[in-house]
Image (cartoon, rainbow, N blue to C red; front, side, top):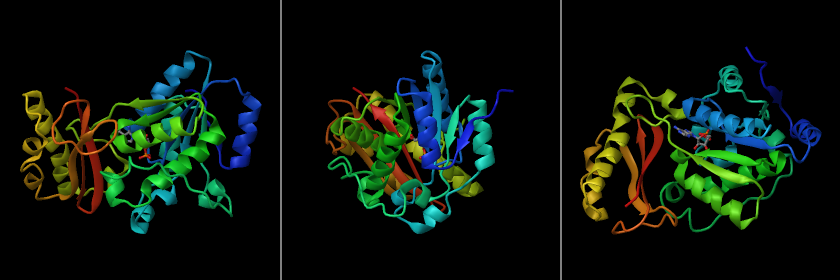
Length: 286
Ligand code: AMP
């Protein structure tokens, strides 16, 4: 068994480690909120592979960021398993885990800044979760400056988040690159999520409706249907056991709704199932 990762709990200790390894040492970075699953592990594995090629190191952050939760209950119910997380990081060959104890350690006592990317947050999750992406961008930029990664790895499951972070990265001229990684699913198709653990047995079955709906739309699109109204017709209504927040087809770059698919597009869904908010998406490329 390999040695476990170095666990760093404060920004000052992390900065010291960062200075010590030198500015030129490549770093692959995977930011997470913990309760790690195979989706996170796929990002860590990609980072490990890329960093092995350049004698680099892999850093994972685990921080449940209160700024990106629009509901206090959701924040408080967010699952935590630090020992399990460290075991998964170790198995994936992660070098350093940055795990600040709380928001005060992450942000400091006088934090008053926020980062907002405009436009891309108008639809999908941005419409129903005010301030969510502001919280995401703020923490990602703060982590970016601390870690100074050569490459940072994000999942396409949070497609809108990835698009917004790419915009911020380009707009603010952040160094390093961003890698967008495929969605990892359970065997039956449910997109992996830390929140899946909160699904009861019935909700776990009902949650499959999200994937089934997206697959049906993907099949209709593959069969030649490009009219969005026809693709979406009745699809939401066929999910009575889910409390649908949105089911939408948007331009893959602007995330604005389209009526007719003529270029790369995204079909995205968000719903509450048994009280748990889940998201999923499929890319529709003509
Ligand atoms: P989270 O811990 O939910 O903030 O997620 C951390 C990173 O893991 C984000 O970049 C997510 O997009 C990514 N991620 C979460 N679930 C999956 C999944 N099922 N497949 C691929 N990436 C994922």
